[in-house]
Image (cartoon, rainbow, N blue to C red; front, side, top):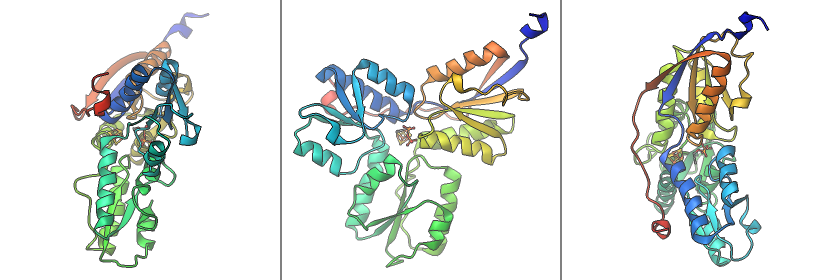
Length: 319
Ligand code: 0CG
Ligand code: SF4
């Protein structure tokens, strides 16, 4: 091999902060771990506890069994509900079957659930801004009687919606949406329905908006951005979109082995971030893999600090 082949070209890495785990993800993972300590393995988990294969595989190794429907849980076995939330029918069915269950729904998702209930009690029809089929959306729709909530995915949906009573509407949103897209949908709703009731505070969570602002802050300085996250992770997908909207190439990868070095051929400054369900160990794995090919300089760009943490369910506090 000639000497030239050993030369690793320079690559500047701009690493966004905040990135990676949020308080709801931290809590959900600890709930599964403590449940395994409390009940012994196996503990069943309904849906991926958070949308990340590395996290799911790590918990499988500790004794978690992941299933999609409660019917798959054998009688008498403990089950944890994922951070994304579940329809009311799920805990109801678990209670009916006498299954010991723990709810790892993020408290910020539960807050939206409670608002939905209150709006329906007040007789309002809810427009729910979110992505069809996402488990959080299914969970939130499952808090209220059928027909009391309608899904709005786009500005076009907001413009086309025909309410029975235009003066008796409210809206709520999924927690992991694009801040900018949601603002456009909300503006369309406000202009069509001036009396529509907005949620108390922002439904898009602090982690989602902080990670979007952090990636925005590095886009202009970067030739391309890698987002570490899963293809079914809503908040991670939104980070790719935010970068692309700013005119910067961006890709979602789950692990270092998905790095496309051809794609990086003309990149001299690369941005790096991670979705709320992607552990920091995967960020380090990506940096390590890049340093096999490039001479790396790292810069952290911090746009906010986060200090939020959530309490565990009482039954697990002493485990
Ligand atoms: O971003 P979504 O809602 O798809 O979930 P993910 O598991 O990726 O992250 C946080 C949670 C819950
Ligand atoms: Fe909770 Fe937001 Fe994290 Fe989802 S992304 S688990 S809503 S803090």
